[in-house]
Length: 283
Image 1 (tube, helix red, strand yellow):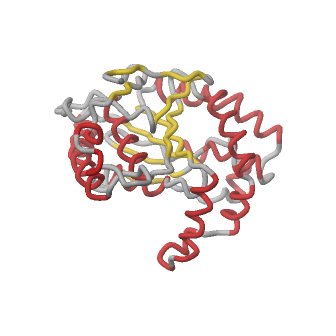
Image 2 (cartoon, one colour; image 1 turned 135 degrees about the vertical axis):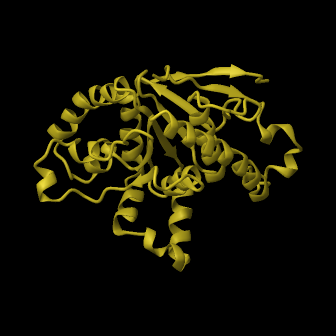
């Protein structure tokens, strides 16, 4: 069984080991060339991880939550770009049908839990009940409260059964959300990403933020901490999400010179509302 998740902050990262002008744009975001090179190195590690998962019949479940337009789907793509699709899949469940509405709330999600040797990524999850369902009245207050009485126990059982379980939350500010909505409006190739709910969600940003913090406080546990990523720069968020996951799994052949920790500017860990972190080589 995997030990408790740890977060190690370090500046022993590629972006801090070379000239800043080769890494960062004037707006502080990382350059595409740097990102693609660093991402490629991490992809090799993810392939090693999958081989270890398959060979040892492990089960890896990774949840992605976040503000609308935060980049959940593209971050999942970062993880599974080079993985064997027969043993790695992404799950994005539609709204529940009439039959599912009569089931135990977690039931349709539990059906998607990984089998031995499999990796599963959830593009949104049972935490819909913690946020979007509460905001738009898709659940009652009683159902919302009942969710919180059960969720930590459900996740504790998953971890106790040996599932490697990670929860990432991609966070963005209002300005970034507005700009990304506009980008989708202006780009026909991204128009499918837009819905009426996106606009309504943008108007409810402050309510989402309140429920996000409630979620961190009530469901960030030692068994399943929340890992919050500053996703205003999608590329930095993606590579740090991969770094965090790789650093917390003891797969064979890990490149310890590459997997050294994460960037304190990008990653936070939430355990029962507490900030948690260890510093390494920080000025």
